[in-house]
Length: 183
Image (tube, rainbow, N blue to C red):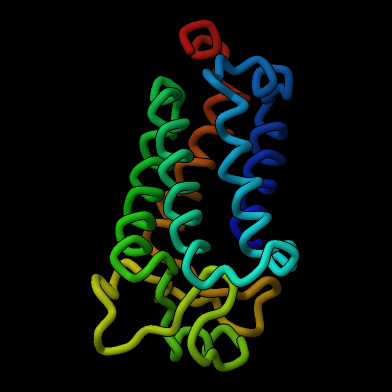
């Protein structure tokens, strides 16, 4: 949620800098519909909708990884857009750590506590508690925002890169008059 807040702030800043929304709408995005499939898949597997389908312990991690691979494909098809390489790098880091840890993002218990989140036992939604056996733990959710901040949560290095790429994309796409014709 904090990532969406940062991106919304970036949008407002770009508009204050003289940016125009029509430039964002007119971005030459290739295969736009492909971005929605991962979103829909994750809405099904990480919301109460999954209970309508049945026990997802075995297939939810596989669908999660598949959704990230589809998102990576959509980003690769749009690598010509500013900031997309940062987004792709962040997604790739997240995909690696998720794939190597059973299809869920490992999260630090200490970071969750610092962010004011309830203790986690096992897994919840798309995260699993880090253990000494966690592979590439430093790519997991280890970067907390303090509990006193609104929307405090725990983030990964990949999340930071995705956010940075989103800010670059928003700023460039809305404000760069010369770039718009070259995108």
